[in-house]
Image 1 (cartoon, rainbow, N blue to C red):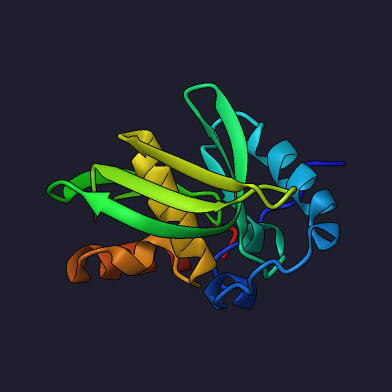
Image 2 (cartoon, rainbow, N blue to C red):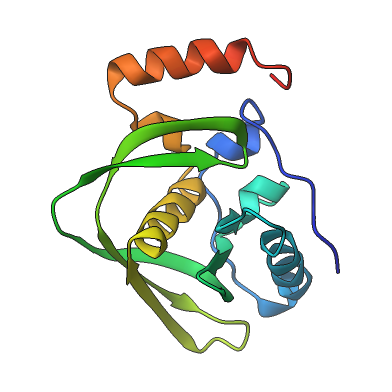
Length: 162
């Protein structure tokens, strides 16, 4: 398949809650595209809405581990939330500090319907929370504190791509 173009902040698909995947036949090409899209340098995760598809699936590329989850549910977060630097392919060129839990676990399925469980701390925990947020129609800037979000929105509105 192919790496797909990333949708930017302002595209309605990014603010829409994604539909569950109900048939593997519908998504085998999507999963290939998500994996191809996440393999590009500097990418820790790509959610289906970021490539214009309103389905619950994402790919990840963390510490050399590449994979995907279909119909993921964030089933556990733990630890004291930490302020971490975060960016997003759909808000290119910007990084802001926001709170994320240091550990996260998701459960979902693979293309054959087999259960998948993925968990981790650090960057993996951050990526899992970030990608599930995309599937819920949330961008990372939605979780910024009020003052940081105001500044983020100002900078985004002044960007070349907005």
